[in-house]
Amino acid sequence: MEGVPIERIPDIVTLVDAANEMIARFFGVRSTFDIIICGSSWDMEVQAISRQKSAKSYENGEILVGLTDYELREIIIRSDKAKFVHYLHELVHGIVSQSHSHQLREALAWYFTLKLLESHDDLKKTPYPPWIDTVYISRVRRLAEIVGDEFLKDFALRKCPLHNLNDFPEEVRQLFMPEEVFYAATRRS
Image 1 (tube, rainbow, N blue to C red):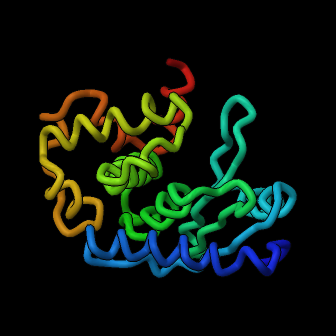
Image 2 (image 1 turned 120 degrees about the vertical axis):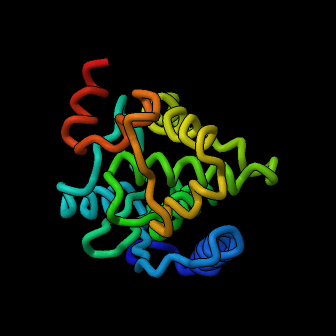
């Protein structure tokens, strides 16, 4: 927790523990990823630059608050800007199967973050950029309408496979494309 004021550490630990507990109750598992807490934008930039391959750039000058490095099994959080939802979102990333495509992991993490916050009116008002809904949430929401939340939860953890992708709508099938194809198509639209 380099650069984090000592008095903030108990609050951060509480947020991480609460998020992990919420995930454990819902999914039956906890994230085992290490967590790196950054105290400022500079600390976060250093972490993001060192993970250039895994860090997706944010649009319109948005602040990078959290990212997950699947190769190193690390979650990096910028504590001076992070809210509970950021900790929860990144910890959900820590349980979603790494065998899914990047965009599918991101969509599932956003979908289940919002699902976990549904009964917490005070927390679910945390804003996220509108493009997150367009690129990720709306697609996985459509998938959930077809297969159901319980199946989707098991699928996220890789407990069950999806068959016959051709039977799904185009916007859902796009989540299963190779990462480069998906993001190239998303930039064009």
